[in-house]
Length: 523
Image: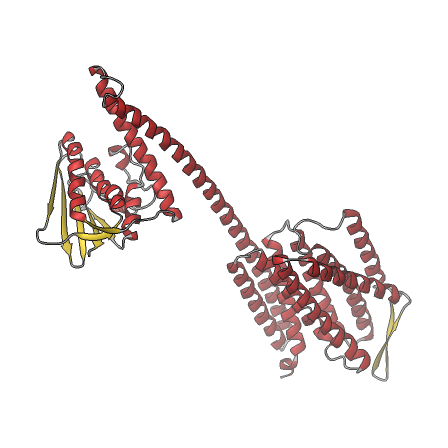
């Protein structure tokens, strides 16, 4: 039952797990950021100081206690130094201190930390009548002045930054400053005033826990205002919870063998969790870079597409003017060439327009002008326009509609005509080498259903997976229609769904034709 009373050990474990998880999470979020590096240094030193502080409060052997106290002082000066560096650096990504100044502070800290391990700072620990008394050396004053200078300079720097900051930076500073004030209030009261004035030292082992307000406040300020990915924060929280639970197992262990086993287990949990966080952050960074690259490429494609479309439109105008005789009668032998050039230019312009349309649909920038219209009239007109092309290929194109039903719907008439109806009928013509295409319209309950059935090359099960995807092509479709961009059905599906409709495709297999069914809500 005694293990259940080790509340101080459990809380120190919580503080160590929290500091380690936060420190490494922030560091791996941006390893080149000087604030991240400074915070990691502060977190690591906090962990070592917390452990040695707890151990010194529990030690009873005079020699062991002497060395533990010296280690507490050793880490205390590094702790003060790391706090000073973090205060100077926060929240800037680039180094603030000049290299000479940093090396000077670092060298002074290293000298004082080495002196702290010698009798010059702490001479001895003696047990007299079961009472432990300590004797300090002349160097304790130098040590104390160094610690108080680093801490005081750090507090002054943070306070000055808080009062000078504005906007987001001020919000950051408020979190850091609040956490710092809470930490130092706890440390002064429970680690100094209580032991010195009231002779109550039972709370000294909780020193590591008292550091958490500053660590958590600073971590939150860094994570929040860098828009740190919530998923990474959740993985960090999970690692912290697993480490705390494992540490609780250490406390409950009733044999030295089990203690050692669970300590190793705790270390593995922390290491695995930290490595997992690092890998996740790396993947998120790559994902972000890939998304930015894709956005840049889409912007470039959009720009090039608009430019190409503009040139093709001008060419179409020239070829159309030549055919219509705006520049005089065209010689008979040139007429077929100009007619073919106009058709190919229109085809090229349509292909570019499809790519641009798909990009706009993907970005959500397409708007619709929705008004009531008769779908039967639109389909009938579209069939008439495509009949000439079908007849040139020797195909039969027919249209039927059930009599007596209303085919009125609400939608963007132009976009449904250009990108849905004509696209599906045109596809049927392009992918039907011989035979027929039957277009029909019927009422299906509260919906109007458009069906386009052909006797063409059909659709395989493998091709069905790509049918309505962006740029999707069937395995052999490009051989039948060399001008296909793969965007037509993708655009049609997006427009149909934006009008509350559905589109399906079915086929009995390769070479057995295909049937497309589009349904829209009727009015």
